[in-house]
Image (cartoon, rainbow, N blue to C red; front, side, top):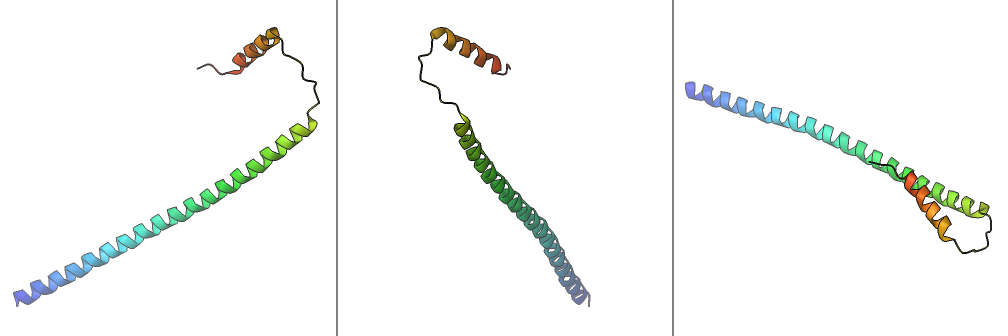
Length: 95
């Protein structure tokens, strides 16, 4: 009689462990799948934002080129070049 009881208990315990593992696996799958789909949505939004920024940059470039005054090409003097370099150095952030 003890043999039948212990065999039945082992079968029941094995079934219970299998069900617990199945439930934990399903819960993990749910959260991983949810995180994956949210990440995909964020990637799509970022790609759309990048595309809009590219369009804005192209429009801004065309606008700047259209409003640019026509300058005759004149040689640049070395003093003006040095002055421009100093201005550029002031713009660079120091670390």
